[in-house]
Amino acid sequence: MKKIMYLFMLLAVLVACGKAKTMPQEAIDETAVEGSTITEPVAEDLVVNEQVIEEPVVDNGAGALAPDAMPAPDSEPGMETPSAEGEGSMIVATDGSVSLGRRAFVPSEVSMAVGDEITVKNTDTIPHSLAMKGDPEFRERLASEGMWSTSFDTVGVYEIYDTGSKAPLKIIVK
Image (cartoon, rainbow, N blue to C red; front, side, top):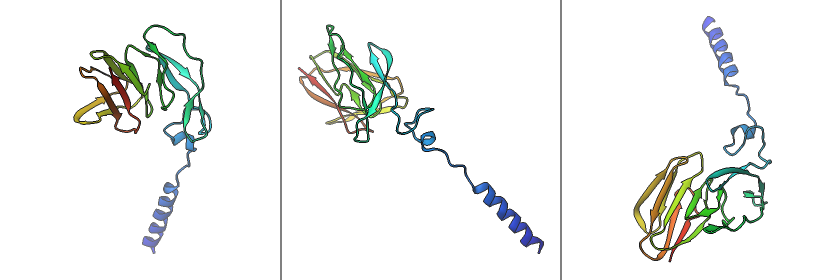
């Protein structure tokens, strides 16, 4: 009889310990920001000439967050306006600069001359791995805030992929 009582007590303790507190979805969602909910916009980073500026984003209705529309920057020599196709951090490309943030390269297409240098900076908080279409030997791992630079000696179109994303960085070398 004592064994049965011990078993019931043990079972009661196990049941009591097994009850977990439920956490709100925003507390466990990777994209949630402290104090926000899933339906609230999350701020994205805007990198202009290597200065980080908070940029609000809005739900574009397709279940993805898109940067708020903003006026084009004043034109300066060597500056290109980024494409708004990708999600993630945005950068105004100056002298072949590209950012790699949450799931996308920005800008997603860069034109450059043979011998010019291009730099890709990981603006995300997690590492990313790069691969080049047509070159199975090319593998580059970028730590958070890490950078990769290269130049191309041959005219052509090169596609760099973040292995966790489907959208490539298209580099057009003229």
